[in-house]
Image (cartoon, rainbow, N blue to C red):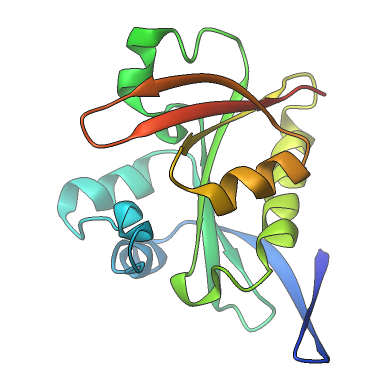
Length: 171
């Protein structure tokens, strides 16, 4: 259990975060999340293929003490941008981590605690490996946060839809 304390408008809000298995209900909720521009790049399609991706791979839900869905994360190939393989972005033996936070919670100062919770959970099972993120370069909020969390930029590559950078954190 990790306690998240965020200071907003002179009051403290405490949120306990918990790791849960991904369920069809949670996956459908995530697939229907809608982010505002320019973060709408992260919107998913609520179709059978996307649902299968969430249920058949290493996806996990992050919930609060009321069991409300706060976000999710995935590890492995699901956290990679496939075209990055052409550029050698994933040659090093590291744990790839991808995640998303409920759109209404983004940009409000919760990211550090949310990401710290996820990285701590991942490192428990992969202590000997470094962590790698793949981030769209336009997402300056995320890039700044990940640098605060100890990640450094590794390499950049382009796709038809965006430019990405891999960021690594070695234990």
